[in-house]
Image (cartoon, rainbow, N blue to C red):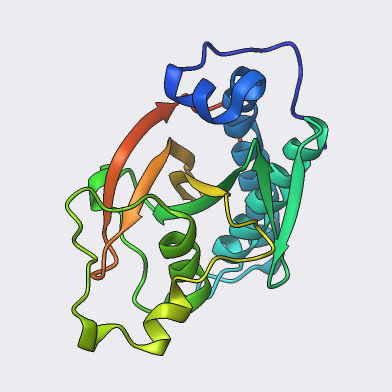
Length: 208
């Protein structure tokens, strides 16, 4: 699946600091790959013929991860597997895609679902940025083995690898609405404190 053409976007200083010489190509490829993932998920939804329990969301999530992994390969960068899921790692920064709403919603309202897997929490707490105000400091009696395990790094990603969030909203009929990328700290209430965020353009989407 080819997503890297001659198109470029002018990357920000933040993006260049993280992705180096790939920053422009990556910023252009991410929106294209999200749109391709939506098209695949939409086709799966239509084939299923279900009004409820649509496979759209699950298909979209997996397709986005796979497409971003394909982009990493085309850039000559790494793809690393965490518990069966592939993640693109460019210049020691792992792309973490997440659909945070099914309608256009401000980024500051993004929140992990209550039934989120422990893996996602661990990825943020082990590879995400430290909180600005040290909100996550614990008293000695609260530093449990379970807490320490959550903060262990994933060897598959590499101890020095940092997460870059790729957050977006989408729905089965409207497609991709908005795309943000940046770095955020996951708070205990499943909300996010954004240390940096930028909006990426949404690629052209075919009529379906």
